[in-house]
Length: 532
Image 1: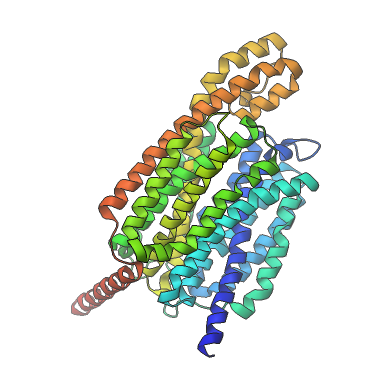
Image 2 (image 1 turned 90 degrees about the vertical axis):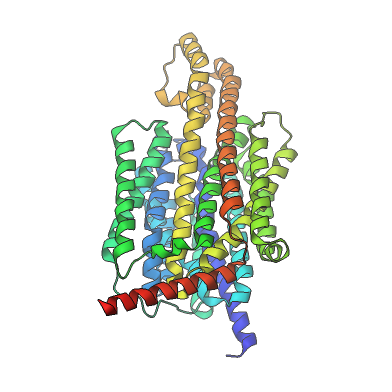
């Protein structure tokens, strides 16, 4: 194959990977706009607040818990094979989700979707690591990151549009055409790749990683739902999850064929990039998630309008993610990261002042700035992570990066959700007690837990419920301001980390330096074993 044909095949293969990425990432957000519909007994499934939460959490638990495992298996068994299998599982589960008849069926089908998504997600980055030469990889990862922004916009926007015109199941059935397109192009444009010398499978490491991650994420999610760390199953899951992950790391440091080579973390570029991704996704995820409730419950926009308002922010990521490799060459990776994280912090500071009357255009501008700044930080950080490991370990590095993103996202939603809940409950309680006494209605305790449940209860009271609306909005905004403050403090911590520890070299140079260190370490290890 001549160079021109190989070039076309590489970028055609990237197109297929982006299609896979779009359908997986969009589904992470599309359910949020359908929560009200699914809770409706006539238009949806009559799901309770807890059932809706687990429709989201089942996907997250399975997805994040298995990302690392499938990243490792993709390196060994073939990345294209894993992509194909994952798309088939995801498409089948999407169809089952669309035709669920009960909330329990919905939750089970969503868990199956998370299983398929976990098979697909880590392979997209690892295929890019193996498909593209060093000089093209940064631009390819930039387009990959830009596709994430596009998918984040497609999810709520497409979901709102479908809900305006079709039944709720259409938001999941729309996944099927994308899956079929991806499968039809996969065999022509994406070559098979794997680690040709994987060594023995680290069964104990894989076995420890799954319960460790699942328990940790379960504990984080449940703590956020209950706004409490003191229930036995919450702190028990957190402590047990952390304990199992510590055992996993100890085992990985000692085994001769580790699933995760802990020596990767000796490379400051790898370690700081992982830490920055963790901090940014933690601080951003909760704010973005709860701003969707700001649009629908405080500003009272329809799901379609709320989804469309996300488009400009996604446009920022789509524009700046592919440009970030060029910006790295112009100003340097560390300087670009400092500016990017500083802009994100400024946006968090703006959210601490958000009001019901804040101009929509101004909020949209800050959304745009935030996602643009995230893109210029995350793209070189991701490139650094992938360049720091040998091609045969690309799936492992990709899985670590994606697992960190998912765990940080879950922690952000849970922790910031708990912050909002801590402020919301005592603020709405006096008004809720007065209105229920006047109307002689005694609602479910969950009515005082969130603005959505309070507003829904208020609408059942008719005119008497109007007295609840304004206090509910005020209480929610106060909690949102505090959550934004927590995000701001976390973002400033990330800024400090970049200032102190971020290496100044290019990702490629850091990758070559890290590879040299690993080769020397492996050589020394082999010599010491020979002497022994």
